[in-house]
Length: 79
Image (cartoon, rainbow, N blue to C red):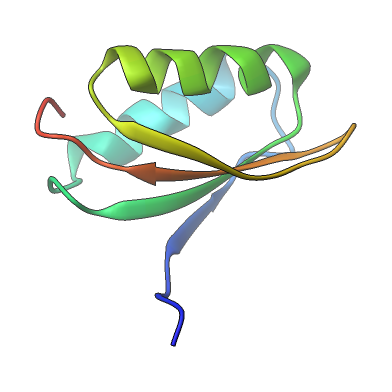
């Protein structure tokens, strides 16, 4: 059975709003917690995965198209 992930749909917003919302979510996150993130803004699609990796989190690309990027975030210990 596939795990159920919490999802954060950030497709309606443009940078910097998606990053702000990810940072707010991380404030209450625990190490090992998973989140599916949906991004549409081209700047956010590049910046958010790179920023999360620099912060020590695991980021996996689940699906990518011309209009949307779906990521799985696994919170690291540095949140």
